[in-house]
Image (cartoon, rainbow, N blue to C red):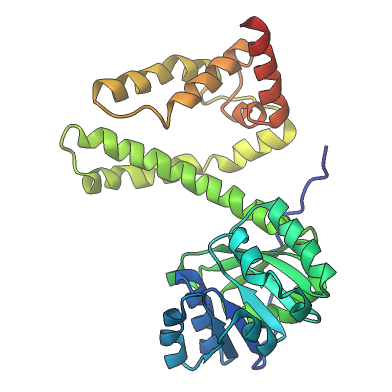
Length: 317
């Protein structure tokens, strides 16, 4: 079993940044917001994008356009990358490995822990220091009080460039394993997507009777907030393995959940988002967890538990 990952360090005071030379590669909505934040903080920023037209607004703010990705890498000791995915990172940097020697590469592209580890190893082979970043903000939040970025990888490189990175928002260090920032990032986004899925399903349901989603949201938002307040207790149960409950057992949820699927069908709403949860509740009951709370679900979702369930199913069919 792998060792538990450390919790991300809370932001501590960051020394004021002196003007630095920084290159930003990738000028989508997020990359442009990062470059603009660096310019706003007084840094000398070189920008490059596959579509040169994207550089125009930033050049108007004082950025320097690079003709090629290689030019952008050569222009600054700190190179920040924000592309669509890590396959794009590989393509852009193919053939540029030698130019990275002595550089610090901060990759804020959304990706997987395995991809971050692979890119860190590739950067090290080419003499570069690698820091992976998970941005916990939308572009409009960058440089604001609620934005923060998770970082992992080369800790010395992170500390060296942290005053510059603080232009984006809070800086949270997760550890020297390059994959940890991506792991925390995807974990947080998993919670967000789960919430969005539930909210959209609720909107789809109430609209079948002509109830405006905006009107319903006035009830939904405080309800979700109240339910989310139970997350620390669920987390304690998951960590301890003691899934006791005085709120709602899996048996109660198992009995009630068919009402959701039946109502969705009756109202003409797809069950595709929620039907898998019925199968999970069925498995929980079959494995003897009827008295446990919903926190038991985290255990049932582990790879070992899922593999065991699939193995048992294969032997009964």
